Image (tube, rainbow, N blue to C red):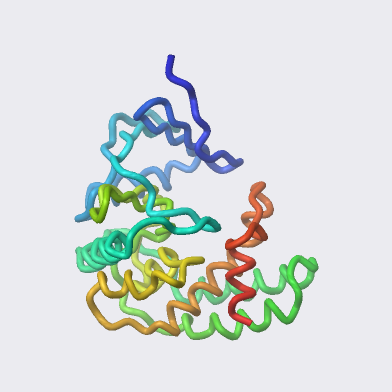
Length: 245
């Protein structure tokens, strides 16, 4: 008998694995709509949609293994990281999806409110928040929108050897800043930034990528804490913030 594996579960959504089938349960059908349409549009490998019966979406497992995990040593080869960069470039060169993403003003407003909350509730030292808020400022500039994945964590990119075999979890896809995707892919694994950029194949502003590392981490801490995750685990978001000091 196949066992049911809980991949991730919190009060917004849950993902279960039964054999080679992933069952995504999400009360927000807008996220599922975005995920299905984004996977159909993306010019890179994505999971096969087996069936959909709200609030459940069934997806086939993609072959290969995840590029890595935040907080764990990366074991994938430099060539695999470069292949991931090349896949991201293909996505960014694709036509824009018909729905928008977050605006610059929305990101800036959320960053201000999260920094205020982190300090007011003594979650992080004021100096750590202030310094990373300063670093994050470089990301808050006008960008040319591209088709972004929106949550391109390394655990969402699967490889087999040096080939990308699938990219999962597309619910945050939309218009966005190309450097945001590159930043999320390399968050906590700065040593592979050069490999990813080489695969991406064009000059990028590394200071903006580093700014997105700070910005993403500042935005993530409260959500992680409130949903039962630990951003202070070694190599995770709080360590990323400390590395900017």
